[in-house]
Amino acid sequence: MADWTTADIPSLSGKTAVVTGATGGLGYETAMALAGAGAIVILTGRNDAKGLRAIEGICERFPNALIAYEHLDLASLSSVADFARRFAAGNEQLDLLINNAGVMALPKRQQTEDGFEMQLGTNYFGHYALTARLLPQLRRAKAPRVVNLSSLAHRSGAINFDDLQAKHSYRPWRAYCQSKLAMLMFALELQRRSLAAGWGVMSLAAHPGYARTDLIPNGPGTNNLSWQIGGLLQPFISQSAAAGALPTLFAATSPSVEPGGYYGPNGFYELKGAPAPARILNQAKDFAAAAMLWDASATLTGVSFDDIAVAA
Image 1 (tube, rainbow, N blue to C red):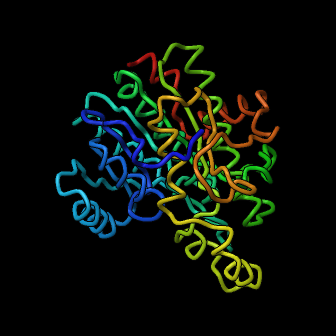
Image 2: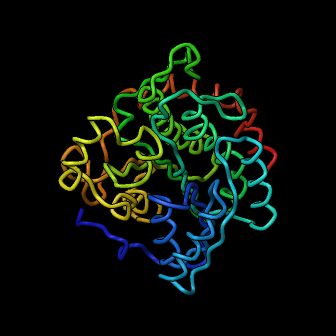
Image 3: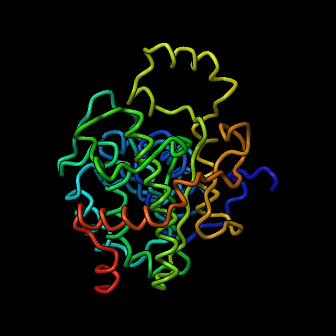
């Protein structure tokens, strides 16, 4: 495909989008582009002050942007439920859900308020519960899409069902890779289940390659030798947050995407470049493991897609 840019985004007038983790980095750039295309965009985040600054920044670029900020902490299932209730009260339908928020390789094991390992809880369980709770509004849209943010890290990931919460053995990168593999498996499984149940939701996934955001400084940090060496190479192997958001925007808006598709940069090792179909490793294609993860997620979060779909 020809290099795809934000200029290729079709008009999104009348469509409503929710972007998690939109107060900075990839989420901010995604929300900016969606607002610029005319969508009604709800930015979510944990830091309300940053949320208001994000609104101001987008309005400086697009004075007529239809945007709002809502508090949402993906590390809290009660916060997820509260946001979903507020959204349902003010919105009949949801056209685009961008599951972007995430934390990376926290040096020490932390837990969410619900007892999940922080990376799996924030990056995956929170988004699983959010998507399920917003299913009624998604189903009322004409052609709804859900885009999950995965990562090149999924290639090194494995779902450890024997120690899913890393209570017995915690390694920062192993936990991060597991969470990003879970996000990709969730996207693929959601597409399969949507087709089987007739939900009408198109599920996709994307990754940003190596994008320059605050994710690394806010997670593993940049003081160790490997990150210092990487910093020297960064201009050659990385891209801006705006460029890193393009695969997400392509998945969310392009008419040429495939249901269940996965998109990333088209350059060397998918580190940077224009959006293109991305490589999916075999562990993400394990249907049995995906079904186990789906069932475990419903049990652990207490949120069931099937129950919500029936109630809707």
